[in-house]
Length: 395
Image 1 (cartoon, one colour):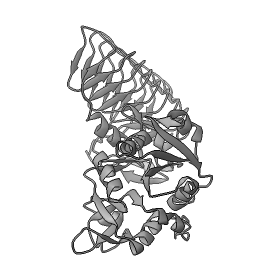
Image 2: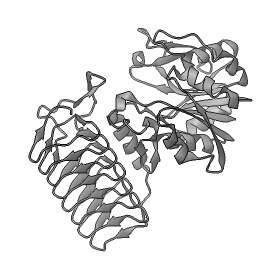
Image 3: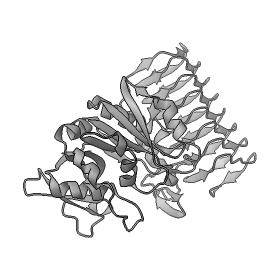
Image 4: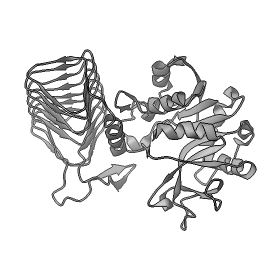
């Protein structure tokens, strides 16, 4: 079986992080988000991966090449963002048998992907508390066969949400040219509906699933994958540093004297921490990133080349590539009224569902010394602040 992995989208809801990096290539632990999906497919036994690319396609190609982990990788180009069925149709020339379709911006329980491929035709289903917010699967009385799918129903037939992972028979390629939906897109769920009409489709339960669409969900994705770390210290770690719990320091990374790290924390190759810094709580310190003297970083993502200078605090935040927080930059991550932090997404104020959430900084952001940043703030790529400035509006 081949796996089609959808990785063509830009990810407008996760801006500014996706301004120059496609959302599926944003960092989650030790690899891009989409690589977790590709790895799950390979571990499940697929013999070829077809990546559907579009926005910043070269970034995806450069990472995976023509072979990844001994498995052939092919590419299909989706020139127009016209829906998920349109994306799969773009890859149809590569298909000559049953195939899986996986979203490159979703994280799946790997065991579920293996079960999905074994059960083909099948769809992954996750139990949710509020099914009205999802595409919902209906089943027969036994619960062993899917009988339909409906988008965001007022009266959900079950609490089984479509988790966006499918295993289709070869015949499904005949049904990819589905009509355009009310959203103006060709939807893969309409293809699933046709498969349901002609085949017994198995609902495959997913223990854990995450659709990464907004900045705080990238933070959640890292919390998930960093939580699975096993302690390993391959880099240069000072004898005077204290590392507790599941901490990984990759070869080529440096942890200086006086540093305290409380796992799960991943320090990638080329990164430097300290001296006398404090890093804790599901934190990714990306390749060649820096945490300076007496700085504290808590539960955050520092992308490649990001720098948190001395005497700074960064909590529950996502920093893009080559961000430079000047000395004394402090991130506030908790509202005084302790309500959930809200973030602007495509012009709307949206609750993150998190009491603690700091800032989202796009690539190349630079703050002046002693800058103060308020909770839920978004700084677009290349933004700068003045020394001593308090920033309380998106910039």
